[in-house]
Length: 317
Image 1 (tube, rainbow, N blue to C red):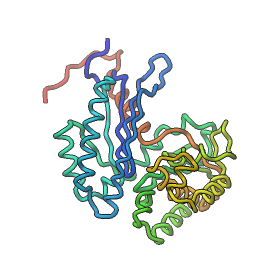
Image 2 (spheres, rainbow, N blue to C red):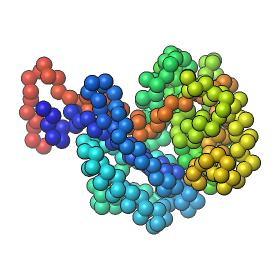
Image 3 (cartoon, rainbow, N blue to C red):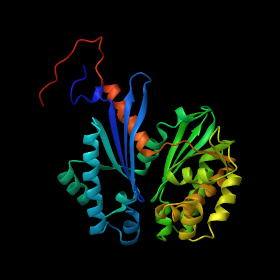
Image 4 (cartoon, rainbow, N blue to C red):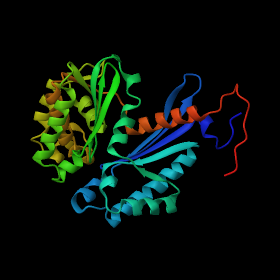
């Protein structure tokens, strides 16, 4: 029988991902028959924290209020779904916000949710953590690219092995806020060129809501292998870029909070693809929240007691 509040035997997990453009709550339940996770809930709310942080350096009182309200809602939803183990992570916008630490303390006091501001390096490693099970060619050379609102995380995989992780302060909201200069693009291209100079035939694994939307909008793609040819992405970019966000909403059935960020996202993917001479982007439906849950489960399993060993009493702290 599963003991109450025993994380090593938890079956219902949740991840909170507080990004620069949107916040997400993902709830999954472990299926003991298949040993896989079944998705129970995914709730995305476009808080757009980055538009404050990248322009005035901090979250406004209104954004703080909205974030607090959302965390209260997420807390109640986790109770309804009987979540036994969760982790809340904040990324680029909260890393840069001058009042980020104070807001996190306030939210902890008001909601009980402890938000962790994770580094770009850790973010890159988390989003990479569960990609391999989605890949057909697990021994190929790939650059895992996760484009967010405030930053872009990359992982270089050679013959299926993680070689290095990097984080760049180039994101969709940061670009729209005018906070990415030519020097940042040059540094991105130069560093990626240096990282990949010894390797050939590198393609991209794309992560994030924008690349998933771009994949769905593209007509010429490999649906079976979930591959988006770079040539098709370039054609779609050329079609979308001249339009206003309102026109993209009307002609391509986009939400307003997607219609503006999708162009800088496509530009980031195209820039990286052209730098490493990639021919396609593999688009699995995974992201930071999925990686958080996978890491929680792995950590809990690693700390679970061996049933063959005699039980030891915990020492009083």
